[in-house]
Length: 425
Image 1 (cartoon, one colour):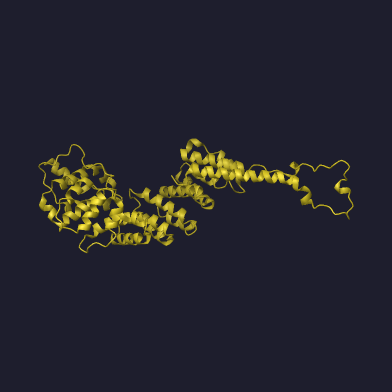
Image 2 (cartoon, rainbow, N blue to C red):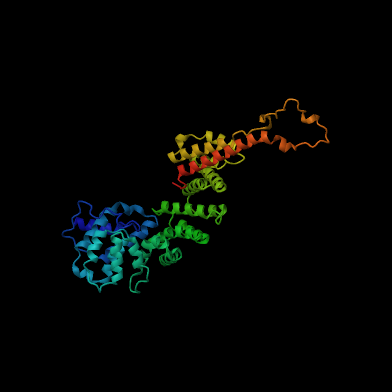
């Protein structure tokens, strides 16, 4: 009786993680769970409960996560103990596949699908699910590239779109984005919309669709501010801001970011500032780091990172000396290792930029051969070489030094690019 009560509570309070790959879940056989003697629930009832709780999870109710492992074990065990007549009903087979595409136990689902009759659900659906359970992603996309029958549940169609979106975008980004739009619009406020937005972001950025990025970002920040997958969205937002630097200006970014809570805004500004800096977008890096500085002051947060990005954005400008001075005041102990490397790189570039060039006083005097008349004593009527020609040999050395300095700077910047990996971490 106690086990039945615990099982009922789990079905009421727990949730699955969003659309993980079939090989990413390892909790379907948690030790200590005995199912003998408990009634077997039909899969469609189990999956319906799980889906409802998933929707609650992405809207900010993460308390069910602590029960995740036990719940997954219950669902997996029930599916494996289910009598054969359960699998003669299409709704149970559809539920098993939805469970699979939402991070369920691929082994349990594979066992179910290999034993069902051919006429219960469309054969291509079973083939695609088995391919997914085996990690054959290309085969999955191929099998699900055509529309499914009308009687296939909308939740299953949406799940298929979500698990195939990345692969489809590789060869038909526009179609992938269109399908994700259908999922997003068909389930406002649900797990499906949340997942569809996150999968749409990199595709829209790839297509250069700034309007879609604005729409998706606004919807996500307004509807899912407490989603456990916010970090994933944040990274995609930063990537899009960098890729569409010339299409989404700073004012628009500030407006979008402003819908998040202040702590999250601070994180957004820091990440965009760093990414812009590494990508050579110094104007955006400077702007975003200044916004981060303002928030750091309001939040009473450590401004070291914001100060680093602000100063680093100026090391190659006319204000390089001031930037170097500010960099020297930043304690490496307050930075993560990757930012310590960035600090050293910025100091190296600033040192090169501020290196004192040769001046006129460094130019050696032109030698005068014995018996020759000094230029100033020659009559004005006699043709004389122009000053540029006369001083050319002496000017050549400073020019060569300058060229070497520039080449050294370019080499240093190339080394820094390799060091930083030209990516945001």
